[in-house]
Length: 111
Image 1 (cartoon, rainbow, N blue to C red):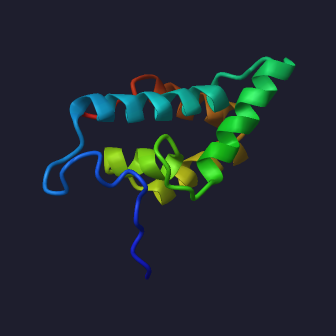
Image 2 (image 1 turned 30 degrees about the vertical axis):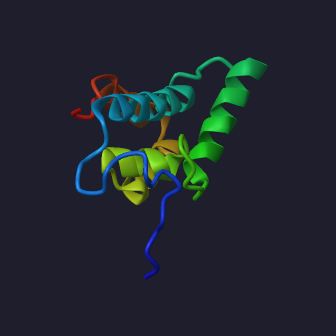
């Protein structure tokens, strides 16, 4: 397995975790991406574009600041688990989607 080198190296000392403000930023980016997918009930062009952008964001393996992989690194989150959840959500029936979405309403990542 190849070690992943993130473009964000140098933003904080390697022996110390990310600054709390950086974690809040990464958390906000992730939560907004979830919202763009889950709360897009309307089929307006704008909502469809947001959903498509969010789905693309989750699928990319780029590691620049603000990317999904970078966000996961900052939050110490497993990108593959998040992608599994997203695939399950997309394959679910409307009732199951509502249940899964409700669990995200209180979604928080400790800072």
